[in-house]
Image 1 (cartoon, helix red, strand yellow):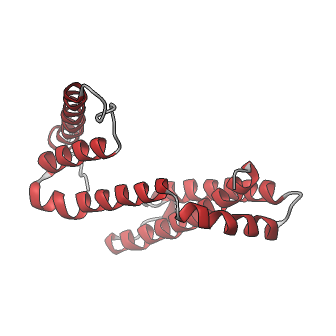
Image 2 (cartoon, one colour):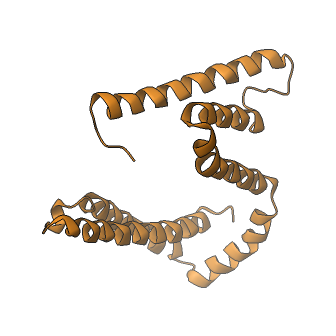
Length: 175
């Protein structure tokens, strides 16, 4: 699956599914806001996501058509099927899955238990160590650990400052 056309084929399918999800969800926003009064759909919070979803769908269809030009859909499906076994057995996929599980724990468990600042620091530090950022397993490890700690503190501080700015100073409602 090293061919660009095969990657374009898979990407087009994924982005088509994503665009359809965005469009359907955006229409759901309009339906939810209707309970507050009669609001025209182009004034609802779902209007811009619909535009983005339709644009993404159009681009995905164009990419899909370009990817199957000259070889057909079935050839791509066979190549993707053969590459799927390699993909699911690779160490890189396993690392990505572990990273996603760690992110899920951060979002759904640690944020509730430890609060934003502590959980963000814990998540950032452990993820950078796991991904071997800064060549932590080479000598001198102390310098790499110090860099990781500094980056984690700075990243958490920037996100917290942004939250504080919008929530407390601008009084903008955030999720």
